[in-house]
Amino acid sequence: MHLTKRMLSLLLALFFTLLLPLYCFAASNLSPATTITDGAYYYIRNKNSGHYLDAENSLNFNVIQYAYHGALNQTWKAVRISGNTYRLENRSPYYQNQGRKCLSVSEVNDEVDLFYYSSTLTTQRWMITANSDSTFTVKSGWDNKVLQTQNASSASPANVIKATANGSNSQKWYFEKIPAPKSSSSTLKSIFPNEMYWNHRPSSTNWGYTTITDAPCSNHNSCRLNGSCGCNSYMRSIQCNGFAKYIGKRLFGTDVVNWSISSNVDSMYFVKPGDYLRYGGHSVIVLDVSSDLDKVVVVECNYGEGGNCVIKWRREVPISDIRRKFAHIFKSPYIFVE
Image (cartoon, rainbow, N blue to C red; front, side, top):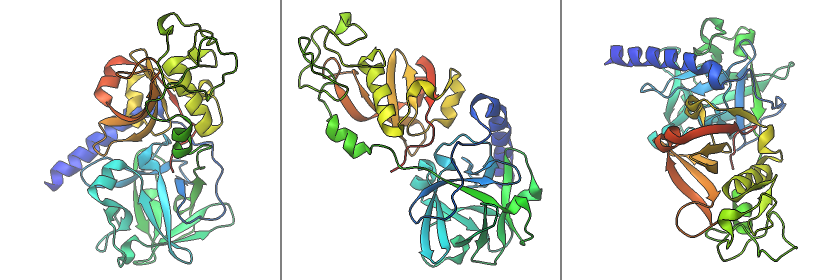
């Protein structure tokens, strides 16, 4: 069984190495934090390699460094235990569902992986200490060894271990704090309630991006991009496209068209909350990914039952369906977390 897991890990490493040119970037655009905030989410970047702490989606719950993609398995929540001692919880829905979300060290060797939460285990307690170069050293509460990349590797992927502290760059980590959304999902849902309609009366001249009604569009199929027919318009886009673009703007404060774009279907391997998806002539904003990693949870308008321009929150869409009809993805500037 051990050999099978090892082979699977190697195959996954080769597979995701081949994906690197498709959807991974040198770094996020977030500045390193100077302090750690209890309850905040972070991308954690190694100073030596420039790659990010990443929970590998494999059977052995391994932790690696990987080129930046910003998805859920590169997202870590810092939970203060006391002083500068924290627990680091991975946001991957796969590991959340398994119950193994806490960055932990082995008691018998130098391996680092994800383990079940325990309030008493010192193996998942980390003393996070600021250095003079905007990095942090992450020291285990179990044996005082520190988090580092194995053999000071600069490869992606590469294993992450614990080792005796020596002050090298492979043992230093930037904590890039992920901002809260510009608008929360609860705020947006109060503005755009489920099963209301993102439209206005065709005769109305006093409408805006947040106008809603309780009835479907009447001139839906012949609507103009400026919204004169009754469909609301944002950036000369109407219906599902305009709505998704406006939600993206409200979440991140920047327009979707200014985000990085990929038309390669394999970019779906790194889909994350906040991303804009276009598939089968339909547009959505991703709110979450399912625990089995085979569905995305979305907010949208103008889909399915309910009438033209109906607003829907948290519909689950199989990723296999999106892949079959995939057009492109706009990658949000950072992950949407609340």
